Image (cartoon, rainbow, N blue to C red; front, side, top):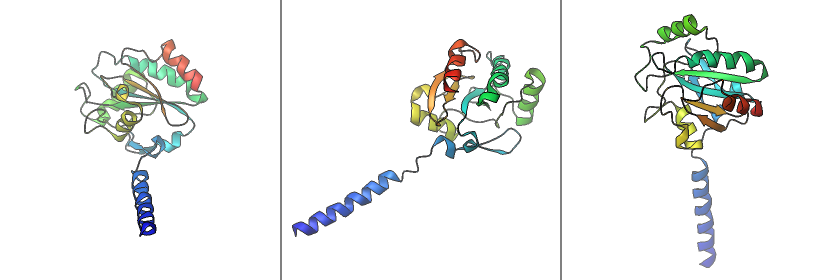
Length: 181
């Protein structure tokens, strides 16, 4: 009887262990997002790169940061930096269509770094990238406003987050990028 209990207990332990391990925990590189042109951006294509994810908006007081994001992209893309702009209307300051956002960014800021479709970045309807960031880094990964920055290291982990007030070309961000590259 004692042996039967031990065997039963062992089987139950393995059963629950497998359930706990199969919680479909995705890595950053398992995620995808749609580009502003309608193609799928597979984040696995950015493996071994440093990625700066920024939720953007056309009608925000921080919109001029697009210029700094383009400068960062120009300066560091050949060294392995990806700037990923994620237009969002989560704070009610974005244009209504992806084509309007694309035109605005190209005409006003000559943006050529990757942009996504207009995407929710907070709350229940947030894109899985932002939910993943919160789950793996905590509440500081949740955008509090437009132009919140999430820096992903080459291993696909959130390295640091930066508020909307931190300019993309600030020494704080550039030094961290250079350290990770």
